[in-house]
Image (cartoon, rainbow, N blue to C red; front, side, top):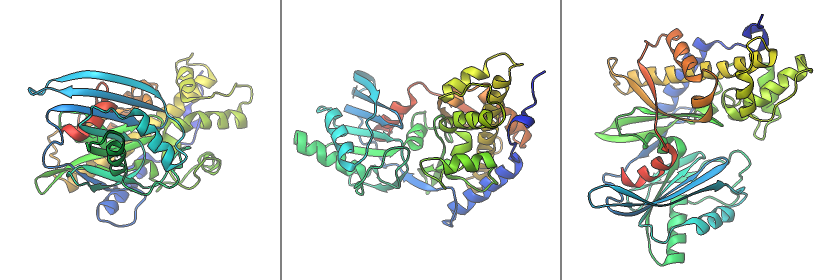
Length: 375
């Protein structure tokens, strides 16, 4: 008989977490101290590029994607070039500039950058979204990087090619929101990290919000989570991320087996955890893997439910409408019954069946980067 999940891992109070997330989001929207952000990004009144050569750049935690396209007079897109690779460690401002110098396409008339790190947005000289790094994450320290990054790329391009392109840059959640057809309510990232974005309308203009949901911390951490936090690269921050995201789930698994089941071999990655979750249902390691992934899905559901209720209250989202989030992330699409468990927990939290939809869009990361300059 399979061991019950409650015996394997700490079970949070999901209803209370939903309430606390909603409270924190409400405080953030009012400009009051909160563990959740409310970072506003206002799109320009008109597209930065409607015809010509556009370059999109995606800089995430591990990989980069770079693509150049030509937008024809009729709006059709012709793909000119695409490449991917493993990111260098951005220890300094200069290593970031060196990366851009190697990869900027001389033909580009406008450049959109999907930058997977927390950013404070402001409006640039062309009405574009630009931004400054709020703080470094993962192993990237970005020492010396204090200026708006889009402006730096614009100056670098001018110095190298003697021409000034339009450049826009935003966090990955904002870019994901721009990957769709414009009718969606926001975005959800559940993979190596966790984040949620919202699209709202203010004064008849669309505003995109980055919530930095991984920073949410208004819940009682288990002893296991406290240990993971203390031993992490950034103790005291990203607490919600450390119980939800793929980066930490394998650590949690290893911690549990070391303490209670040393006969089970440790794993290295969340992919290993995912593979274990598909093993025999009477296997202890598989049970533990499934329990960890299921809890992650339930916690994400609590955050989604709170965000939905916030939108109903604050931004006049109609009760009769479907609340649609563009989704991205390895856990979301490949985690064991992850989407199914999100929907199950949404129902338990009082969200009617079919009210919230998570939408998959092919190549959403790069499409979102290009969306910064074409939407």
